[in-house]
Image (cartoon, rainbow, N blue to C red; front, top):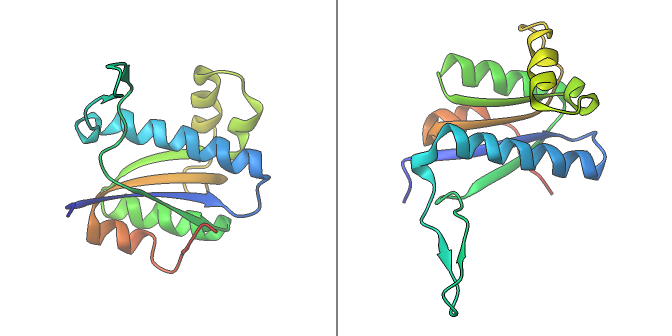
Length: 135
């Protein structure tokens, strides 16, 4: 049905609140990166309008750090849209600080806790190959 795929990958050793936080931030990053993928606003029977959501499913996978780093390498090599979340971002309080701690990371060895990828189905499937759905 969809030519593209969205995958969110969350590190499996995080506390539940951290996993939920990472998924929420990654989802907003996907929506910002591909605004044309957003559906129309929702409207209830009383005519109240609600916000838009992504018009296709987002699959959530679990991975350890090496799994996240491998998915990142695959996503980079396939030129997928990538939204990263690194561990240091848990200690910041705002977006500018998040970008600072991200820029300070070793680009070849990111301390990833989450990663969103979007692109052609086959390319995303290659990036998440071997990872299981979050359970």
